[in-house]
Amino acid sequence: MQRPSTFDFRLGLIGYPLGHSLSPKIHAAALRACGLQGTYSLSPIPSEDKLALQALLTRIRFGEIHGLNVTIPHKQSVIEFMDELTPTAKAIGAVNTIYFRESKLIGDNTDAPGFLSDLKRVMSENQSSIANRKSAIVLGAGGSARAVVYALLHDGWNVTLAARRIEQAQQLAKSFPGYNLSLTIFDLRSLDFDLIVNTTPLGMTPNIETSPLPKNMIFSKHTFIYDLVYNPRDTKLVKDARAQGLSAATGLGMLIEQAALAFEKWTGANVDRTAMRKAVE
Image 1: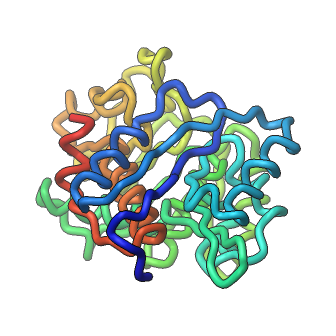
Image 2: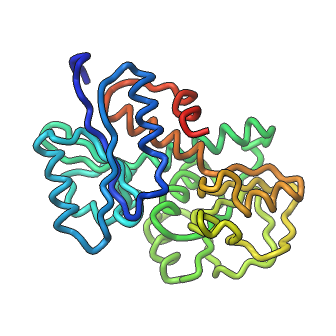
């Protein structure tokens, strides 16, 4: 995608609420690192306001906006307004990146590759061998869980899904026919998995003393913890795991990686992840 060097990119994020978002800082850093002009704006739209959602997406069609990220609660509700979904977004059933190509409004999902890329990075940094570690449990069954499950299944992991509402977990499992996806209710006393991924909001600011796992839970010594929550920087789940000598990471790396992949879709520029990370550290 060739654009003039003076092109002014207008990018943004749809979701509700958005007061906690680090995306403006991350994408401002990406624009600077690539020497590009542009802005990244927040569009807080409540889940019930479909007219506002449709009006914002129409602005992409008219070239007023060049790219949007999508977060809770709109990752699935935007789908009906798309002309086309990428294979990844279609398989996951959730959209986190929107752009306009060849007169089509396209919904994409960079959460899945962003998660997997960062998971491999942090496990490598913590000297955790992925090749021989293939059992994972995913906590939650929302839009983020869909991306994580998709990424893990396609990378050869045996995945168990834990959700408070078993009906939601069953619905997610049906989205991935042909895979052996195990289900369990959210009643976790002990876990013997190579990887635990939290996709729920439990532990997020301001409720920083909450955790998706029971109090005083004993982890298996070989378990790696990945918490998609990145605010606070170290969640209770991560701190509890590290207190037992385990390796653990929050979702800041995934946030940066999925943002970088979306930025590349919008601008055609390969962005320095280090610059994006420095902007929020």
